[in-house]
Amino acid sequence: MPERHRIDELPALAGGGRSVCVRGWVATTRSSGKIAFVVVRDGTGYLQAVLSKKQVPDSAWEAFGRLTQETSIEVTGVVRADARAPGGGGVELTASDLTIIGPSVDFPITPKEHGTAFLFEHRHLWLRSRLQVAIARVRHEVIQAIRDFFYERGFVLVDTPILTGSIGEHAGTLFATDYFDLGKAYLAQTGQLYVEAAAAALGKVYCFGPTFRAEKSKTRRHLTEFWMVEPEVAWNDSNDNMRLQEDFVSYVVARCLDRRKSELAELERDTASLERVVPPFHRISYTDAVEKLKSLGSTITWGSDLGGEDETLLAKGYDRPVFVFNYPKQVKAFYMKENPDDPRTVLNNDCLAPEGYGEIIGGSQREDDYDKAWSGRSPGFAGFRTSGRRSPSRGRCTNSGLDTVNGPE
Image (cartoon, rainbow, N blue to C red):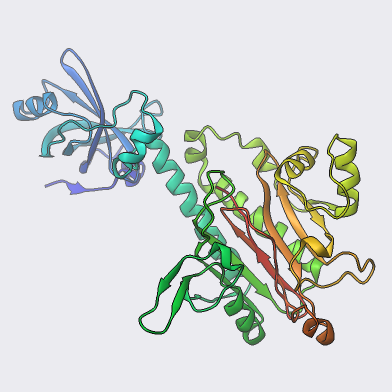
């Protein structure tokens, strides 16, 4: 019995003349007289198997005639190199046998166009499509890159609770549930309170997990459930914070460019703009940003927060992400450290991405002045957050801290 292999293992076996067995699901079929072709996928890749009526058993030829989309099959044959072969692996299989393991009757998602509502109703099946598989693999790479980035820099992962008894942001965006007879519990809006405490023990920490906001919205910048990254760093100041942010974003983007080329090609993603995401990012003060926006036709006035249109307009002028730093204190969280050079502002930043994505990270240095902390500010860390949604920026730091809010969709 030939040894069974995954499709992504086959390029290393090409040319050896050894017979192998592959199991998977039928993507497409076609035939030309006495030659038939079946493209099979197994989750690791796609493979074209070529069947000649003269070289396979009658049962295999008959089985090919009964194949439909997503039929489960086992195909046996010899791997040979072919750079033109469908699937992108540079190999195809000269089949010697084919058997049906399980039939597929009336698979609803065919190669024709389907509406979004239809696809969402059949999402458990839509996940098998090339586009959805590519998205899943890029997302997996982003997640692994995030974890590796912090691990390589000595950060400690802190797993914060999903059910909490405290309000992390503001009460209007809480999902609440009865917690036995002890009152209300809430789905976590942030891990902020927990990683702040951990930063004072471990110095450099982060949490990364599901976050919930009860905000009913249909924009791409708001989600009710998403994953958020929240690092906290003791002793960092606002400049340290921005350097960490640009290193973080650049690392994740470079990782995907290096390891997910085929998936990005499948998604038809222009990678030229991604290749420009390298440190240092551009920097502009909030005050200068307001003047620049006015020159571009915006009606913004000093003291107002940047809206989505302002962020998009400003970011268009840069070839990579840009930091807008030192916002007016009245539009930012109370715990951000007052800017000693301009007490009207705080030591914070938003990282804006091009292509209309707007704010992808918000971070700040935390107030470390004891008296100011007790008069309405909070003790200092520096931090940032990044996730798949837009949210008020914030940060942490026992002298500085990092807290990131938004991130790639």
